[in-house]
Image 1 (spheres, one colour):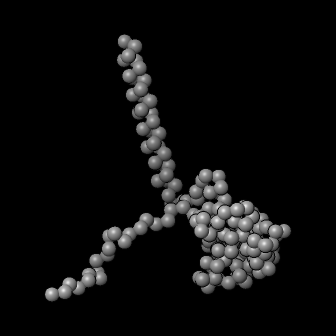
Image 2 (tube, one colour):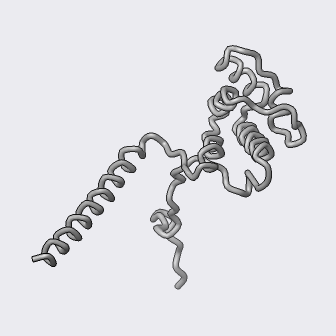
Image 3 (cartoon, helix red, strand yellow):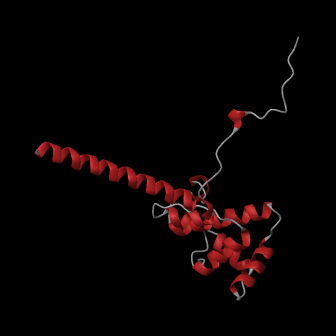
Length: 154
């Protein structure tokens, strides 16, 4: 008698943890000069937005509204091109691009260069709690070391 596969019960081994920090992997950013990595991540963010039905004209319009100054598709194309050396995105436009595309992984490009990660605010209390627990362990260890030192002096 053959067994039927259970399609109702979820596979517990198929679970993978959710992505916690914002950022693209090296497969997107690659290596090399910072301006090239910026262009590659901008290009990827716009490609991902396009897959969600958001074209460059829409992105440019949203950025224009966000910044209160004109942003054109041509500007987006130049920012996404590694060959366009003279056109680099400004910080306020970069922020507007994140807002317009919803590509929060763009934030990781900035933070990763300094050894930090960008995490959603909902995790901030959990991180702070972990840091407090870590500090408490350090205080207990220091106290125990001092107690041993004092006992040795008696």
